[in-house]
Amino acid sequence: MVAPPDNDVLWARSLHHSHDNSPALQGVSLGVREGEILAVHGPRGCGKTTLLHCLSGQTVAEEGEVWFNSAPVHTMSALQRERLRRDRFAWIDPRPTLVPELTAWENAALPLLLRGTPHRAAKAAALEWLERLDVGACAKRRPRALLQAQRQRVAVARALAAEPTVLFADEPTAALHTADGRQVLRTLTAAARSHRITVVLATYDADVAAHADRSVALLDGRRVNSLTADEVEGRDACSLSV
Ligand SMILES: Nc1ncnc2c1ncn2[C@@H]1O[C@H](COP(=O)(O)OP(=O)(O)OP(=O)(O)O)[C@@H](O)[C@H]1O
Image 1 (cartoon, rainbow, N blue to C red):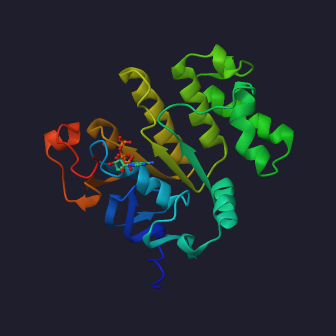
Image 2: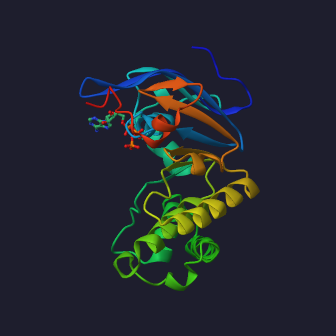
């Protein structure tokens, strides 16, 4: 095993992974520098979510290596990977995944509480980030009483309140209207830059990818240098997705 370059917070080498014998990643390598916002860009089914799952330790790739700083994630036990995700990573799904029984602020505070942050400090951080995401007024409401766009803002607040080393955002604005999506994305990227949070942002949308410092393009589970307009729109069927 060769350790990753010093200035990469995340580093993946030659990742191969398949779902039901259908290859989703076919030899993807990449490095993510500390503090950068990296877009993983490509059409639907090209392997973006699978790549983020492998980088964040949710999935161990069938072949290849993933390193977080100097730690080999691919050889960690399931418990070690779970701790890594809890303590150092945050995740935003395309659609908000909140705990229905908890209020908005309790949802936003949850990762901090799970890490053992004192209740008062966790609540203060959650409320601060809900305000920044313009959903401070919803703090005491449960998810079912919120609009979808408000729920997604709570999910973004939850990810940022935890001040992770790396934030994985999988199509974070997919469920939002364009103007709403732009505003959430601006808040997310500004917060990440000011707090030196590294972001790996999966998107099929070139406008979303433009918010990143750097983009890597995926097609059919492989890195490519650039995408044509048709590929970006996902109009080309992904041959490996059938
Ligand atoms: N759990 C699964 N079971 C079977 N096939 C899967 C599974 N997850 C993903 N795939 C397939 O693996 C390939 C890559 O999927 P992946 O979700 O990583 O791509 P993506 O670029 O994130 O797509 P999308 O934007 O639609 O989420 C696709 O062909 C997809 O159909």
